[in-house]
Image (cartoon, rainbow, N blue to C red):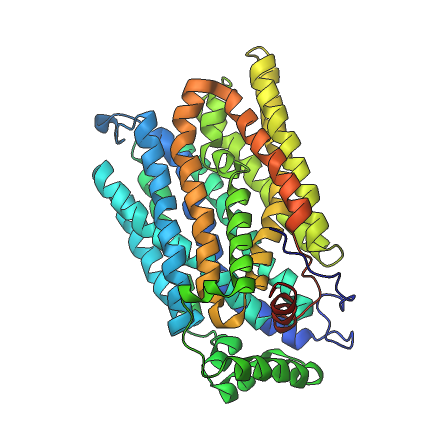
Length: 481
């Protein structure tokens, strides 16, 4: 299946309006709204990254403050959040379409708070898994809702930069998790240190809920509900007057075309062009996770322990993963204003594939020495440079762009469900596979990603420089047959 778009016309520079004039007032308002909304991304990153440092302490015996985890229960605890996230993405997408993006994010903030406190206080593995699933519902819902919310607020020329800020906040959250894990481990040798690691995410959850009270609803969602005057009022607050009328005309046209249609649902997949887009989005989501990125993000200390490092050294070295991820996403955001989505994704995928093969070679061909440890860490960082700077940055942005307005939430939720189910599979299987095969497991990832390179070269569209309404019209026309 190929989903290709014609090469778009050159767009205005990021931060400029349609006439090329900068609009600092508009940008400032959008930045504030984006920062508040992307606290959901920060929570996503923290709650998925924190488990990497908590697991070594949770694996200690109960009398030492841990939960006595085995390699199998490590995988269950780590993957329980991911399983919850899969269903949270579907549920969050449907709620966002029905009740609005803002109210959905407010509800997710409450779930983040309950899940963080429950996991931090969990007395045993069963309760831990239950609260990790609940936390996963929030993570999945945020991953499906926040990028769409930002994309619908942003003008076409700023969409890439603003949407990818969510990816930046995800990796910042992971860096905060790695850093706080190392700090807590350094100050406390108690097996119960993991409780503080998990509970700290309650703080940004409260900030997200409070901040969203002051952020407006998505104007495009309001328009889809016939509330055009409210949509126009919100757009007027975040747009230059020169660009406002043209964008409003597009939104009104799209809303008028969808007026009178039944609510979005699975029956929409009977429409060929919609089905092709959703299948492509689902495939893109699954293949992004089969890079093996979360085997590194969740289990980096475990991987480094296998090379001979001690627990404290492994936790400290993992901070480098977070730093590189943040720098890579920041670089990717800069590149998106200058390079198309498609070439960035292709280059990133090739870099990811080569890095995975080199990690496997280090484990299979080198003796167990400090040199091997440093090389494994170096190639993990190279992997993250390409993954977070190119693949992940483009992935979340493209998913927020390609789906039609009327069913954007449910389509995004379906695609992100694929993300989390693939993530769940990798997270559940990685610890026992690593225990049984060692670093050879990265060779499996390498082969999978070689096939992904071929698929991307054939199927990935270019979406840069077009409004969301223009993209919808294009896909409707080109994929209708």
